[in-house]
Amino acid sequence: GENVEQHPSTLSVQEGDSAVIKCTYSDSASNYFPWYKQELGKRPQLIIDIRSNVGEKKDQRIAVTLNKTAKHFSLHITETQPEDSAVYFCAAWNTGNQFYFGTGTSLTVIP
Amino acid sequence: KAGVTQTPRYLIKTRGQQVTLSCSPISGHRSVSWYQQTPGQGLQFLFEYFSETQRNKGNFPGRFSGRQFSNSRSEMNVSTLELGDSALYLCASSADRVGGYTFGSGTRLTVV
Image 1 (spheres, rainbow over the protein chains, first blue to last red):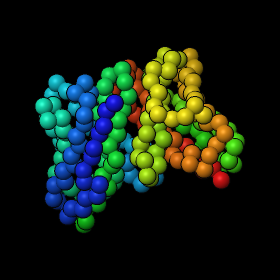
Image 2: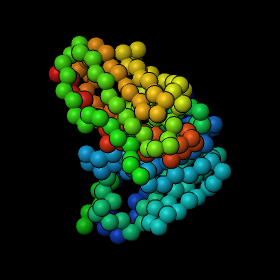
Image 3: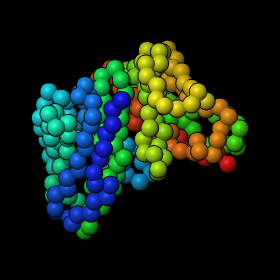
């Protein structure tokens, strides 16, 4: 089965700095990679996703990059703000199979 | 457009009892997945239903079961509850299993 590893488990950045979270996966058949943000006591919310036929996707301050050869993908948040503080989960999906989630990264943006 | 609705939000049960959780997906979504979230284990996949059929199942004991109705609403049942079943149970729905899964707010189950 798939194995998704996520690093770091905790991350603290100063407001305005960039944050990068990395995930690796093991199954080369995985073809969809979403990122979810979960604020304390709330539901995970999809913030960005990427499919295996794309190398990079950007949405305002958030971007995701995918390296299929190395089997890793990363979340980049630029110009961080206090409201970006949350737990971020990466996931890998093999169509017709299931999601495998990373263990989460707790991001704290220090004002 | 209404989101994914899970009921109840909170539940306290005693060891040995059984419990049924409900998930109503976004209108038009036919895929419903269930996850268990705990501080130690993160998000663990339970099972997925699409068009009333279970398509995938995670590594959970047979005490965990589910079903999906013709209107795509799904229920999850846990029998013979154990203390370790205390968790946040989340469901997520998608139109076509290809992506764009939206999560509900979850049901917080506490087993005492």
